[in-house]
Image (cartoon, rainbow, N blue to C red; front, side, top):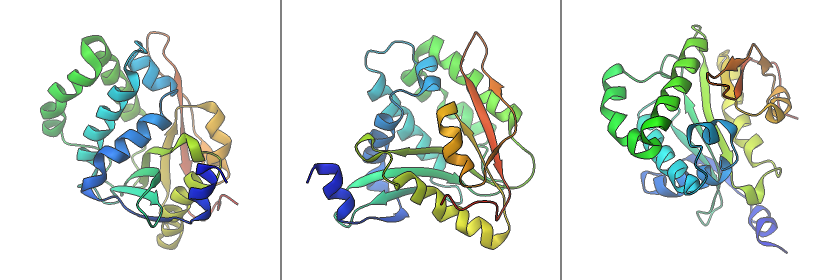
Length: 217
């Protein structure tokens, strides 16, 4: 039995991430997003990209944890992290202008001067396209590459969508890969447009889900 199979056969559950797991969550998401086109556009120098992505997700978690929904992980009973999802509850997806300003120096260390401008372009484009209606927002979903395709990401998505269906609340996300669009469509998400980044940057696909429109089966 190989290592990924052994991990999955041991079983796993979905729970809130613990503060002490911040580094492990960031490292997992960095592995998951190593080939992400938007990350590559913000960090065009491939050398050292994965550690920089990990630093980005550590900062991102600091902003995410106070929000309703927070950081959730798929983890084995022994504490091995298999996947992570960052959710924001209705009306909680956007950080304050003051918090954004205070985090600029830290993000500058991650992206560098040119990358920081592109990161700001990404943020502005996403904010401009973001829907006004109250919803649950999934900005980040990632699974360890060793277990991708084994249902871990589906379990992380399905857990919150079940709550959305009970409460009659919609959900929203942006897919940074067109190849991931069918995955989200199985859960009832539908593409509502295209977000094109400047300077011949990659596209993202905003996706909206009304409650009760798909289970991912």
